[in-house]
Image (cartoon, rainbow, N blue to C red; front, side, top):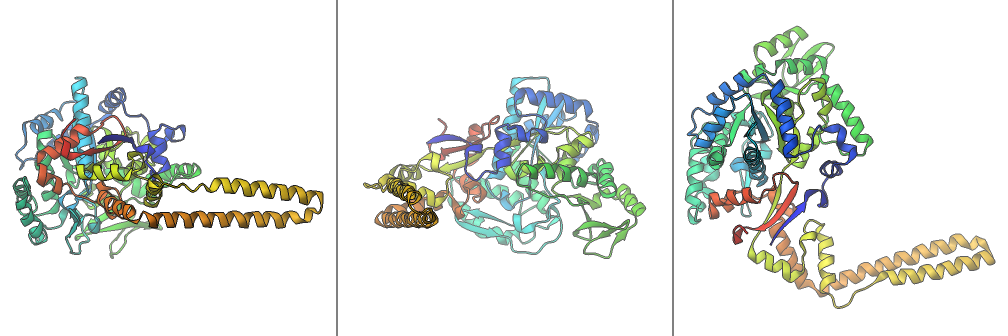
Length: 533
């Protein structure tokens, strides 16, 4: 079984993302270019003509990657980064323990394959894959766990600091049971070595994440960047000042949000008047301004306007962008032409176009990442027996059950024919009332509504009885559904790569790479047990 489904055709996808993927006119004001080989080349030409931070970026990247044993492809990409005709395609993510949900892996492989495809098809520009490490994020509860099979492995501690700066002390104990179980898998030894190099050896979560991502993707040439650096933030000081003093991002993004609301699109992130945090003494606090004075909320610290502008100049590392300003920081630092992200990420990027225009920053091509549903041969056989079609995979659970029960039922209850008869009867009654006493009309219409409601209750009772009659089929479906949609949601949002890697090793990553549709917005359903076909 291998099927590709257009992400825009999946129930539950937001209307903004559907319209963006389908290139609806209503979304055109919120981006510059659609994804294609030609548009990536146009974007590369535009970006390289404006980009001025290459020397500082390359020097910093060499420093950050200095301790790693780089693959030949990584060394070549790092060398190429200094070339004025080199550009990047980027994805970013939080520093989830053991990489967290599967889509962490999927989005990185999408970036890598897109770069490979562009490098194979032309030689005017070098396309380099970059992973942006969200080291300044502070939502520890979002990243402190992962699922191995059906078990949730959780790092239960309290942290308020940047997650990248959290100590890995204690992770040996947290991961001990999982680490031991890996011994019993064909490629468990390989994964244990990666864990030993990363979480068991590196002092901080940032360092550990760099190592695990490096070990998984080094042969693909992936480079990674930690933007929590004084050197890099120095490049961003004009934008920090504009945001804090002039509140430029707030005004521009608010205008865009008003337009999106007028089109009934859901707003992903609302801007604050100041979209930076202040980081000091292992805490990350919001900055607020009242009557020209800038307060660090949750602390006693405050600044006058001149003092905070001096602080930005002298200690830019103390200022941390929020979710809306992080993309701006990324595009200032990198010679970037495209960003691959999840639907929620793409939604908040679409809020930023007007601000990018005001700041004269090139707006990257936005690419909703590929998704996957990994199946087994046993699951495929069960789906066939249950008549559960690929096209119905992502419909609501109850809707799928009704569809399956209906397919296996020998008798089909058609309520519509009874509704038609009732409507015909009441139409006659209304005609009779008009010939005698028209005051009956309201009573007749009320009675019609009552009878139709009664029919709907009968229909529901029928489906309930029919479902009970096919109880075994329903229970078998529910068991299969829970396997394929753990916790009632998409597999890629819950499961971790480690189970598949422990069985298949690096071949798991190669399979996902091969199945990735780099120029299409697809969800691929395929059987990992059957090999490439």
